[in-house]
Image 1 (cartoon, rainbow, N blue to C red):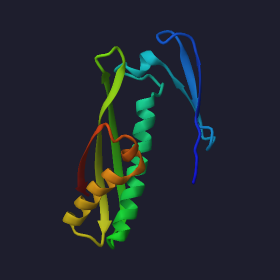
Image 2: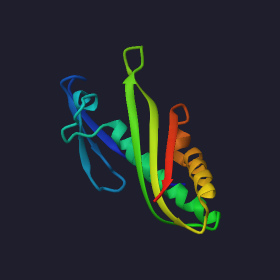
Image 3: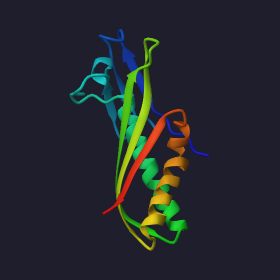
Image 4: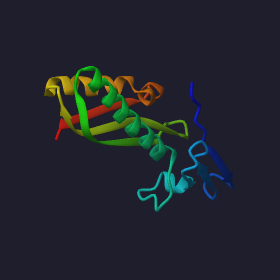
Length: 145
């Protein structure tokens, strides 16, 4: 199957160091990372592993939902998916991603609301990123536009 690659170059200590994450496979960008910005209220233009996971999860979920709705005879006309990834202290001196909240507003044709909601829940459970994050609590708030 397919493999995608990202690379991080890091210099310095955890608190004073910084790094660059390169999306190597696609070559679409290089992004700064920093531990203090990772846990700060404002990232100030610096990304984090959690933000990258949020991007991966929201896009994966949207693709999975589109595919599953098609199998149900529906068409996903548009979807707005937001993934909120929460990171907190884990009690052992580190951090843990303890929850992810997916919020979906969609416009669909060909299925009723009940089928849409059931299909959205199935997409949450079966998208590859959700499967990879199976140890994390993932919730979904879905609504039709």
